[in-house]
Image (cartoon, rainbow, N blue to C red; front, top):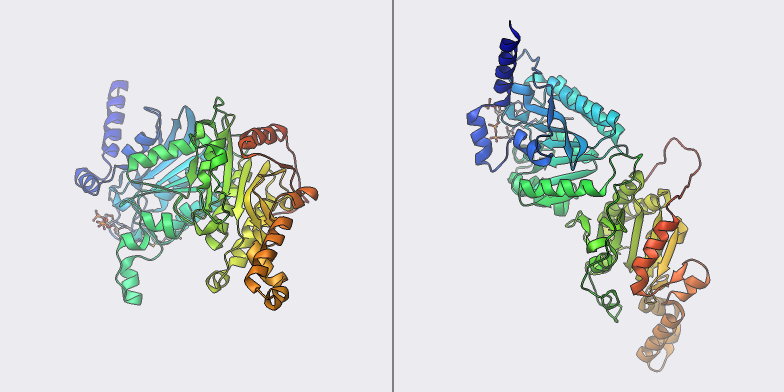
Amino acid sequence: MSLKRNILDLRKRKQEVLQGGGEKAIQKQVKMGKLTARERIESILDEDSFHEYDLFVEHVARDFNMEGKVLHGDGVITGTGTIYGRPVCIFAQDFTVAGGSLGLMHARKITKIMDHALKMRVPLIGINDSGGARIQEGVNSLAGYGEIFYRNTMASGVIPQISVILGPCAGGAVYSPALTDFVFVVENISKMFITGPSVIESVLGEKISMEELGGAKVHSEITGNAHFYAQTEHECFDQIKKLLTYIPWNNGKKAEAFPPQEPTSPVAVDEIVPADPKMPYDVRDIIKSTTDSSDFFEVMEDFAPNIVIGFGRLNGETVGFVANQPKVLAGVLDCDSSDKAARFIRYCDAFNIPIVTLEDLPGYLPGVDQEHAGVIRHGAKILYAYSEATVPKITVIIRKAYGGGYIAMNSRHMRADFVFAWPTAEIAVMGPEGAANIVFRKEIESAEDPEAMRQEKIQEYKDKFANPYVAAAKGYIDQVIEPSETRKMLLHALAVSANKEQTGPYKKHGIPPF
Ligand code: HXC
């Protein structure tokens, strides 16, 4: 064959594979409001940057009439491209080809691109849209998932792993996204569950829709499986690109620095916290009063909103914020908020991102529900995560720092590098009301006017403990600062800790209270 004919043959072969599952299947995909796998990859990556690998891979199944059946690309597209000029590895399951189901060669394509990402130390983006294990391929499909899960675990903490759920993601298949760092979901399109509605109906006799069982909202608000929620696929892709501006390409690097910017928040920082300590405020206003251009990229916005986590920049450098949210449940720590914060702290620590903690909480949430849901086990995660983290750790106590909450929220005792307190800080074992009722119970009961005595004792306790100066006198906090000095002190702390080094005792690994 002449070179010209070879080239024409190559083009023809490529053209065939690029048709995916064919026009009918593509139209079905479009009708469901979904982009095709190839459109998704092209929308996420820089224009014309995608290099596809393994285009001509074919399935090897022979049972259940699979012999001779053509499944283009075996239902998954893999390759490399760039985002803002920097390389990433990517795969997208193609639902138009056998429902994006995962057979042996489909899995091999995915594991090959995962190995490549790990070796090249670049982020991996996985787009999931699949009917799960390819039924005709039996144990080979299960083996494929196992190989993926193993690689997710090995790559964890080395390269960023991003999962995008853009269709069904069912059965054990959900565990690959669950093992990755960030999961993105889209309204009406994402569906994640272990056992689907039909199984639930046959086993439990309960009818439930896929959306109610494991739709985008469910995973953003209730389960905590999703970190980012979008209304459309394009909004989701913008979120992915934005996230990648805040995080480093691998655990040996720092996030890319941006030109420093001053905050632009119109809210005066002195006016955010109400004079009455019982009144709520939005801690995001404080975060934005400190960050460059007042940008704050929130993670898991709708799950456990009593704690706020996310990324911002200080003088161009990425930092992770962990902040109690007095607007929701007075900012208490509970099972979900402890889980949410602990994982984020470990993420920041693994990827060289300094952590800024803003503290205002009355402690852990009391109640039988929380105790029985395991608040001891979940609450311990946050202690573990802060203690273990060796990136620069800065705490600002805004208002309440009571009891276990004081210790847990990156106190000096968890090895915070810098602890600053606003003059409004109250650092005590518990709130003045509760403390007065317990410590002065006898005096209050035997007083002529018990209520007047109670108020007097509350005031006495407040004067003594509900301030930052007792802790400052012991050196537990480094400086009491004016609210308007917060950004300046954060910048100072980051500059001082730029070369921080800290090592712990040798261990194979710790045993966190997972
Ligand atoms: C083989 C599959 C498939 C699968 C879908 N298809 N899922 N082929 N194995 N798991 C094929 C269909 O036969 C069909 O082929 C095409 O994909 C499109 O599927 P439809 O059913 O027409 O699409 P839709 O109506 O949109 O329904 C999508 C769906 C449904 C809800 C995902 O297909 C479904 O329930 N699939 C099975 C899901 C499942 O039980 N998977 C196994 C989970 S267990 P044709 O040729 O007709 O176009 C699992 C274990 C993993 O994954 C364990 C890991 C540890």
